[in-house]
Length: 437
Image (tube, rainbow, N blue to C red; front, top):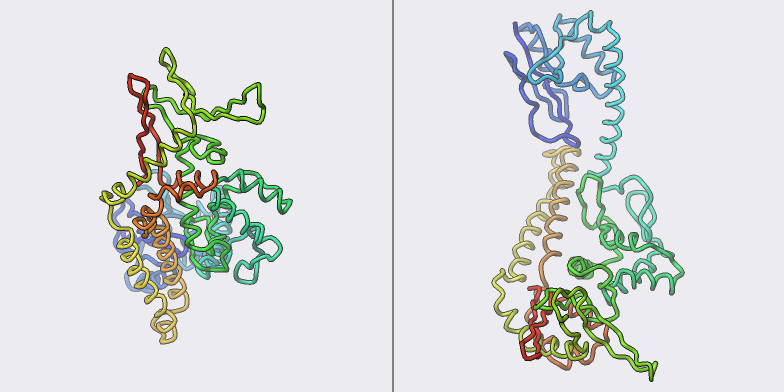
């Protein structure tokens, strides 16, 4: 008894991992990858060395539609070869003979195969569009409209999205940017929608698909690469902060913690009854377990001590960084990107010379573009290459004095992870700054 194995894989949908071999005495294997050459070879060799069975994982492996499946079943029947279909039990298979073809179970199997092939044909169409870098199905993101083969900027709505990003980059506040859109443009969006805008690759000129893959530079971008990298750093920074402190009006909100009771310090505002215009700000422990409670501290005094600590400690902290130089890492990634770009530029030449067929060239181009997108993502996650120059600037006291409170909040959260209040028994206190880098 001779049994042959036949398997089919679609390059755009399936992985290159082979179909598992069943627990049977397989005499020969035929595996197709995107075409049916091995199937034709199976039929040709079956005339010379007769086969008793052909094993397939599913009936859909024989063709892309029911007509192809029927034709290949007829070809096997003409050679008096029975089909073995894998079952749910590991290593087992059920024969497809004349009796099973006439059974109601086979009719149900054909219906299931037909439905699966329709779903597969739809997925294959989407995959072909991905290889051609066409936009995915569905409505275009706000700020764009669908063109014939790419997204096109919508001149009426793109300025609204651009203003949203500029406001967020300036103040680092999502809710503040949402309120700004409503006040200036009358555009009402929820914070959830704004958060999706911040992470949407479309606004960076990239096209993202449901598979998780991204093709870079497919259309005009609203957000530049430098702005996108800064935006990602802001989002990562805000994720470390307590809720609603990212848009708090005070720059120290969410950053200060008491080293004695480990409680975060909230900004409290006190207005004297004698003068409603006067205002005093304090940093007060939210939940202090000690008795008596840790006393509140003047907000302005803590702010000035924090700025003085930053000016004194930032240069030494940057110089002591043990991580690799960001500029060197960016250069290494740039070399990899240039190699991918060289290969990408050679594909049209290889296709014109007939070395690569159009389908293979398109698939290779798609894979190179996704790899370039991954390299760009690594670059965006790196710290600024001019970190030493920035440290020199923020170590000047005058730099902090010239900033508004929202701008000071932006720079504090860019570099400071936490400010600890260390208290002494005699009632004095000092700040201990933990930097992000």
